[in-house]
Length: 102
Image (cartoon, rainbow, N blue to C red; front, side, top):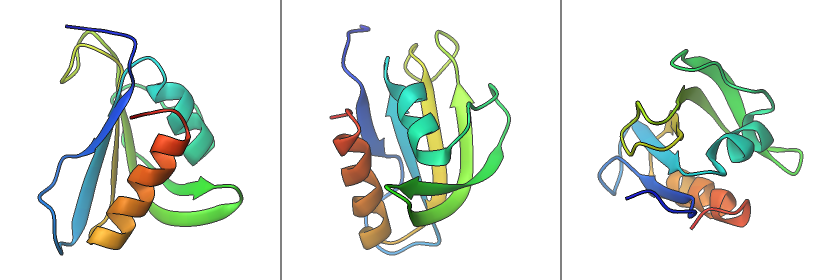
């Protein structure tokens, strides 16, 4: 079921780890990613960029855009693969929520 919400969630298990995968799904996903990585992502092309917000770099990692309806959710999905650990993960999710996701 597709609705007008944009959601964000970690796709990796909580706790310490080398990599954290965060997914953004919904109508604001591409706008949020452009705000945070600074470019319009090319579909299905892994792009190494900073995760920045308000002129501060939060992390660096790989951004991937999966356009709907050929995505995990049937909606536009952005995936950020960054450094693991609960602090980085929660900070990134909080910033994405501040940008309009829930």
